[in-house]
Amino acid sequence: MRIAVGADHAGVDLKEAVVDWLVDQGYDVHDVGTFDHESVDYPDYAVKVAQAVAQGEATFGFLFCGTGLGMCITANKVPGVRAVTCHEPMSARLARAHNDANVLTMGGRLVAPGLALDVIGHFLGEDFSGGRHAGRVDKIVEVERRGGSS
Ligand code: RB5
Image (cartoon, helix red, strand yellow):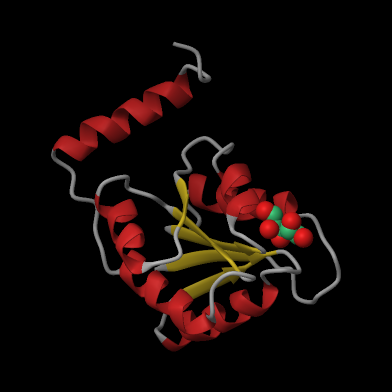
């Protein structure tokens, strides 16, 4: 499975820890950067990862900034992306099971690497439940198709 990852300067250390773990687990990792602590703008990285997922080049995307929030807001502007910010395992599992989330964002200033890897493991370990949740996700897609208008 191919996973796209990206970070700004505030998330790069957490990204590096996650990339090491993903490679160890056998995932094919597409890392769009950043690669050091020089200040950069999170939307530039969020859009690259979001587009990789939306275009089917990666199954999932993981994005890291200071809080995870700017990355999440930006990624959700790309049609086809359902991005969530999760900092504990239960919401990560339910984001996959109920929301068919395909991008996970986290805050490098908020979570330690050990917890982040636990959250990511739960996200990757859960499938979309379908059933009643499929109709709800279809409604999200329909809102997106209408450009947000009712
Ligand atoms: C950068 O200082 C910070 O604003 C950014 O990493 C992120 O937390 C934004 O949502």
